[in-house]
Image 1 (cartoon, rainbow, N blue to C red):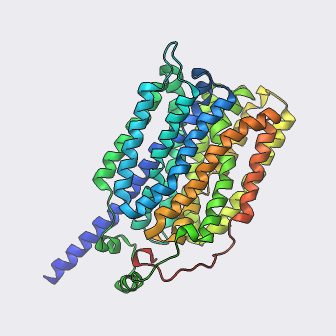
Image 2 (tube, rainbow, N blue to C red):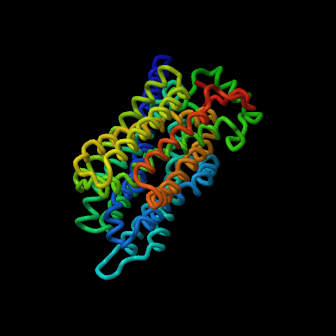
Image 3 (cartoon, rainbow, N blue to C red):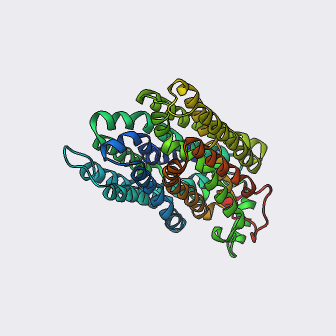
Length: 444
């Protein structure tokens, strides 16, 4: 009987350990589906501009609305995730986002002489952002609950890899769909992706029970569980909203996102208008940015897990990104205007700068979740995403203004400065905070 019990425990442990990868898969798919929208739609910027009869100012407005919607909704969704749990919020967010995208496909697309106004398109994309903001915090909290410290950097980086992976797929598919079949097809594909992911979330996503948490490796021992039960009688950690360490990481992430988002939102316009690149070159370049960023995020998560140097890594990315973008500004300035002969050079520099400006995401969000603890990870991740997507709102609004008063070298120089601003904001070492011993589910 004893042997049978041991065998049953081992089977249960194996199932729980395997299930955490399904949870990570759901988190990856959810982020990829939504990223294909908020990173993929901007890659259709040239066709948005012509199809909806927009100027650069109008283009910046509609693209910025996606970021504004996410930024405004991230914190409420994060607080709701910590209260309701990952499953409910992620299902609600994916299904409602799919419905909003379907609405765009049905009612907000150019058709013959009918061209939706800039306000209608902007409000539609704002709604997509408001609803899709639920995906980031809920999927991140689910991953944190199933993985332990020493594995979370890799797991969260894999989840964050979904952002450039989804954006890369969007960059390859959406411009072709928009140019050949119209924007209804592009919005429909995005809606189907979100709805399909919701099915997998319904099947696989749930919060781990105490036994599953032990089996999956998120708790080391019964002693840790006892310590967590004792700590549960008192406030476990200071609220993420009042934690200066969390805010510093979040604000640094927001600043470092500016060069990344400059590439994502207006990289296609730069390549098309400045270097006269064709649709194929633009699509391949933007897909290379997202693919390279995905690989860099996985590598950086594993690297920082092994070396325990998340803060140092984020600071290094800040410096490297600043150097790459100031180099792009110099090369663009020396080349003059509309320099088609330098297309390959510009494309390569955009790829390198875009990858450097994206590689740190998983590391930063792991740091945020670790600082807050699993029970409050939804709020901490929401704070980080709020800062990130405020940058997504402001960056495409600022670029047309910079172009009107300066030129493309000015845009890339400002992006370099923003990357450098993140350097003193990211903390060098752990900041003291009013924390007590973490819960068992946070122990590593």
